[in-house]
Image (cartoon, rainbow, N blue to C red; front, side, top):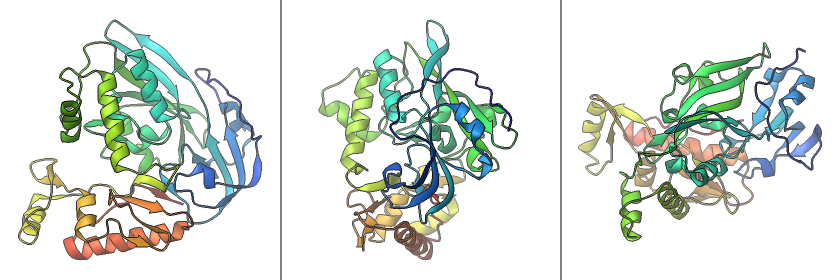
Length: 351
């Protein structure tokens, strides 16, 4: 196996579990809290560890475990990414470009940048998961997405063992989509991302009603980066359950995009249907509205169900199996299709 070339040093940190581990429970490494085990688990703190792993393309890479639903044990190797490192690679008076190791926690990165006075990530506060998942999912919230600040992705080709760099354009970003979820899926391990952030003259996005209302409530007329971040954190905490208390992976489904003609037809029966323009011919319909309209919000099925405050969030009440959550998701998809002729696509990866 060829040696992997590392372009900037990642800071190792202490991990009290030596690698590899055999038949290890993954319950604490997925935010759904599903009890499954893996034949072998490697805790990755340095890319050089991958030199000793055969058949990397057959391994399952995990970051924060916030976007995965396990439905069975993993009869193979799971690599849990715990690489660390944040460094400035270029800056001027107005902007700074950071290189960040993919194992960094996303929310901790956001807080780090706010502390430094770097703008661009504040609307994406409290999104669970690792940095490596950000470009893969093109994560976003309250009017901001990863693609708005990302300069490049560096990823290890699991076949050639060479590091390759993808520009923003080459990542082929879409709504919760990227090249790494389409034709490059399973072919790369994201090692580093580059973000360009502002150091001054920040352009704050406070246009969402919830953020505006929070600022008014707190009598803030000239918000700072931290103000916007605090608003988003409080809003998310009021609507979404903490995975440490109630297993979940955040939004389980994507908001579907449909033709305006389809929407107009639905309005004859559902006058209150919500939508947001995407283009002259397409609109986005909130998946949560569709699910709630059908009475799923707050409904419990065994040890799983839809969260009482947010219909988009499927939860584990403590003893659910992955197959139970998947069955619930499929039942919701079928119900939405039969009523609205709209296909709900899962945002979560099912393993």
